[in-house]
Length: 156
Image (spheres, rainbow, N blue to C red):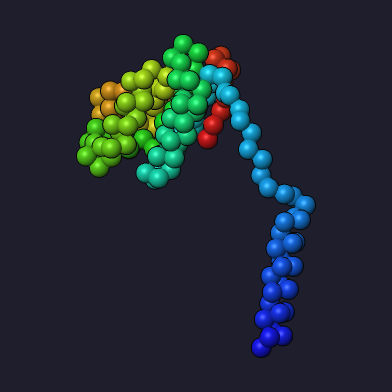
């Protein structure tokens, strides 16, 4: 029994020594100050979790870059399967998320734009979509325009 205990202790010490000497070491934390950003998010998620994740990321970028409505621009371009979340008829189902997005839009650094073609394919007219959403003729074309003409970085 003593011999087994001794072997277990040796193995434990050897494992600890190997872990402490790992060639890749420990992650380094770099403190970085981010300047205001111009970002366009391509929003097509068909799940509430996916849409929430995009909103969380956009909100966090907004926060860590200073939320400056003059130098920042964060645009969520909604198309594809994400369209129904923004329909007025689905307000009760997605109320908390829509209220959150509305408050972010109200801060003036985050905008939500929706593809009119995608909305139409789901049977929605502009009057069927929440008022904090700006309708654009085509989502993909809007993403390209923001990248080329307004220097927005693309995020998916």
